[in-house]
Image 1 (cartoon, rainbow, N blue to C red):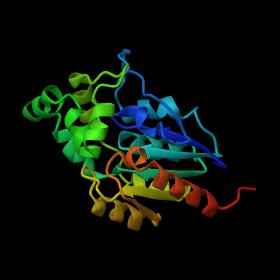
Image 2: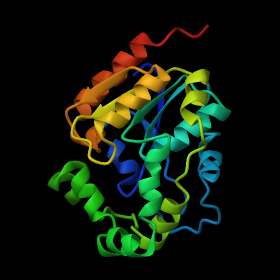
Image 3: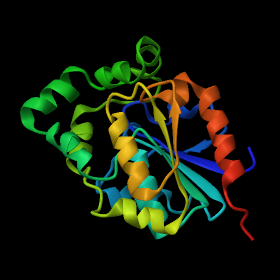
Image 4: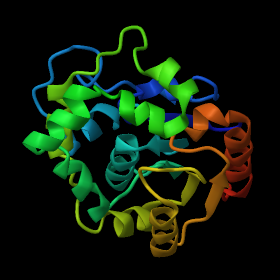
Length: 224
């Protein structure tokens, strides 16, 4: 790869979904590593990554990481932002709703993340990401994070104004359906590339994902 790529992960699978691609990753403190986290606001996640990249870096964000990448880019523009399986607006209402007592019990305490990794890619992702070594699926932390998932209003417009934006979306995406990707693409004038996989297409279909990464590098304007 010609550029520095920094991948910002979602949950519950975390940074391991990027292990088949030539990218750097970060792991958000206290989300899956058992460390104490005082602040769960989205801005606190931005503070964690803002010093991990510069203007030559391409940020690629997945799920939670897509929101963090977008907010970080507004504060400190990278070379480009690539979004996959995420949303920047009102779609997160459903995530916040899942933090309500009854739904929280179902999604986070009963399944502890396994439901999400199964739906995101099938049995292969369930086997790899349901209980990876060193990763904790703490229901209470997932609930707290869900409550804070409210991106700033107009984030997509601010992002599109500061750097090139691209979308890589799984055709089998179940959490952020294709119409979410099409809406983002239209509102930001961002090219949309489809992958044959689902939510974890960067792991289930890495070769296709990599080819799209290379294409994005080839169409980015040369920085003087």
